[in-house]
Length: 129
Image (cartoon, rainbow, N blue to C red; front, side, top):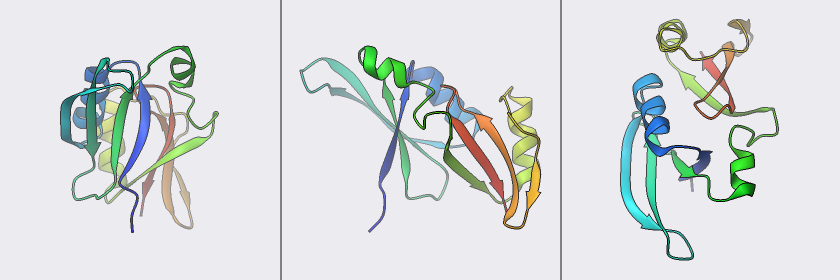
């Protein structure tokens, strides 16, 4: 058993794809036409870190309620955690791409971490071993 996908609500598919692939280094697994429950067109967009089994479904906000959740899916808490083998290189690459970090890197007993915002404004921990 494993978690297949986690959805992140976004304002724009293409901007989100660019952030996750170009900035974070994820792979674009799928970008297919689909339909909403009431038959309107949408896209099924999945990105995933290389060699990972769990992906991120980039879901375009549909309506006021979902739009209100963009960037606040975890109610202001860190809701997503990206573990990397080389913290310093990944952090440097993300800074060079203009990623907004809310904290400076900090060393803890479990490794190094820093909090950053994704393209929608959700808080993530960048975690290094």
